[in-house]
Image (cartoon, rainbow, N blue to C red; front, side, top):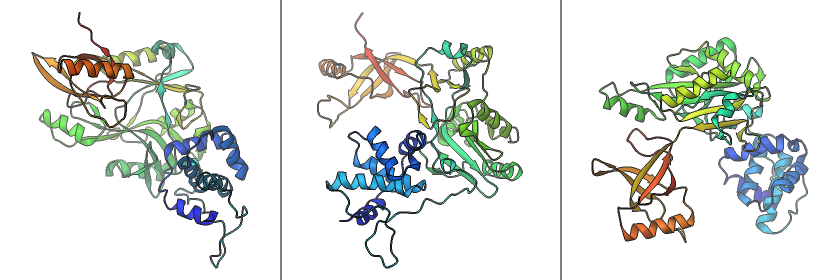
Length: 418
């Protein structure tokens, strides 16, 4: 098989570039200008980050480079993938063009077409890698007192990027999938505004509001709360605006977070508050103190703290910690009702089904599948086998779901007899 045949066979097998590959493309190749250095740029990336890299990632980088419009960089990755898989160097010279008659040649795909011509490649719908918060390495008080960080409340929804143009509105998930419009009303309002002020890109979150004012990730979850409370089942979709990434013809990803938030607030002024929310930003120490107190008193998940001078860095940045989250967690002592089976060698169980004792009855609370060391798992399995239903563990979670089940639960320890 020559390199051309190899490329064609692999290109058709890869349907989509994942968000983590696009994150690395933006934060490593583009940031270091390796995307401008042709196949040498690919070689440099592989030299710096390619130690024991798997073939799937190399192929994904090749597809990503093609979609971004850098075929020579793509060829560097294609050749590396060919070498890994076949153990031989490609025999076709670089940069040869496909012929009209279909003779063997190196096939280079055209860049993916732009859906929105005025936007740069990294802000095209389906290619935007969202900035994501990581767990804060410091206490909440540090971010409250630091003038370098601003705070926003966490919303209980799903991340959604909006690209609004005069002709169409695009919706993209955190995983870079193009989504359907959340509601006709939201779509019409965004389209109307884009025709007034021009194309804009918003970074935010979609959630559904119940009749009690609680936020939910899906419409059925909110509808269930409405039904329980004897209210109309229909849930209201709300788009919460965190910031803007493009406004007034300007790419704000290279601007400061303060500018992005200000632009998001400006756009939000023109949108109907029935369907849109500009997420409040706490900027001063008193505002941040009030934000944290309100989040805790309302039983919210926590807060987001972001450096007000940072650029927009796609993905999770665990080195600079420019965007972090602090949480309020719930700890419960629960009984193990079952150790679920697993096919993983060396693991005595996959997860633990747990229950809470309420008025001498065990109420199922869901399952816990993380936080265990190997020793923890072996000790839990031993105790449960000896005394089924009597072993109690401490579990930490981020709250309970609408059905009263654990949300993002983690094992903390075995409860010892007192």
